[in-house]
Structure formats: C-alpha cells, structure tokens
Length: 65
Image (cartoon, rainbow, N blue to C red):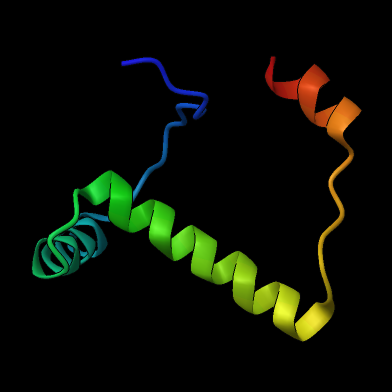
C-alpha cells in the first residue's frame, strides 16, 4: 500500500515502550497509530497555546522528497 508518510526511527526505554504499547492496545490502535495520535495531540496543544505553526511547503518538499 502506497503512503505519503515518512518512516522514522525512534528509541524508547523498554518500560516506556511497554506502557505506550499497552495504551495503544487499550485504544484499539497499533503502536504506530498511537504514536501518530500522540504527536498530533502534542502539535494541536502547542498550536492552541502558541499559535499555528506555519509550514514552508518549498522547504518541506526539499527536505522530505
């Protein structure tokens, strides 16, 4: 299945990874979906408190394409 999502590597302490995986299962999400949800919530909360983060589409394209 094709996707426009970027694959990253992330490191966790074993206990934290276990707990996030537990929460993901409780929420009927994959670990990846839970991490994506948490990241989206973090950005949403940041933008509520600090204003919208403007995205330079040209820079974004250069960096990730």
